[in-house]
Length: 115
Length: 114
Image (cartoon, each protein chain N blue to C red):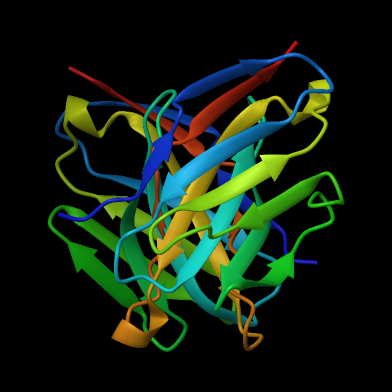
């Protein structure tokens, strides 16, 4: 069964460094998302992406964050200058509303630790 | 602003029992509701999705119902097994065209006692 994959599974970085989290959505999906979950808290929406542009973003997704689909398979989240409070599990998700299903499929997540 | 709440926060039941998990949301203008399972330190596995026009969905031992007007959904698990132990999350999608973001609940941590 197709699945969303994410790399790396765990990323440790120093405060102020740039990180890139990578995702490979399900191949025929057209809608892509990033969510995050700070330890012990709710899963929070960050950004949605369709047709090579951001369709919606949350208040969390400030100028330090960016997303990109550099090729036909990868979807990346970049944090330019990490802060301690960016430490969280980051989930990528994808969906294909054109197929008549609205289900968002989530990847296993990348645990980001900012020291 | 949509708020999603799940009660109880934690639940422990003996193996074999049937159980119900609750989800409530403040804004009834939703497009659909999705139930997920999350194992410790892992990603989210989609269990069931109910469109706003539907009343319930079933998959195996799982049955999810939706009462949009009252802002409630329940997830019924029949004949519980130790492998069902996990955190269960519900999430709602708003009706706005082009708005696909999910708003998640607080989760219910379920423990099935062998």
